Image 1 (cartoon, rainbow, N blue to C red):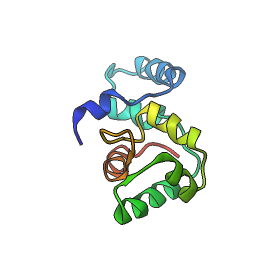
Image 2: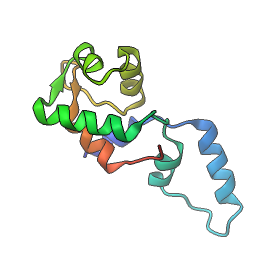
Image 3: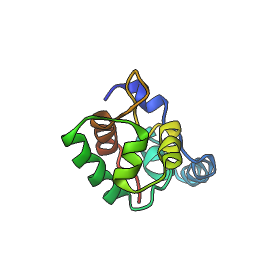
Amino acid sequence: MSSHHIYNLCVNAKWVRELCDMVMETENKKIRIRDIIKFCAPRIERREERFLQLKKLSEARPIWNFKELSERIGISRQTLYNWKDEGWILTDENGKADLKRTVELWEEYQWNT
């Protein structure tokens, strides 16, 4: 997974602030980016189930348009576009969902459910 995918991830600023406040109360004033992602990334309902669906679909076909993908996993296209905007769905050069790369991202950065 390339580092530019990390730069595009969005996290909840309120949760980041709360996490930073907690860290500042400890002796160690440092926080890992991985911890910020883990604790402050958007909560995706039934994340593990969604992950397994995406993984299975990626094995069948790595590239999907958002309409087909929303129908296959039973969530709205708008939700998928929101995930894309937050950096949790990666796309190819044509703007279609690249599930192979998305699954790799989700595997690497498993956040709280």
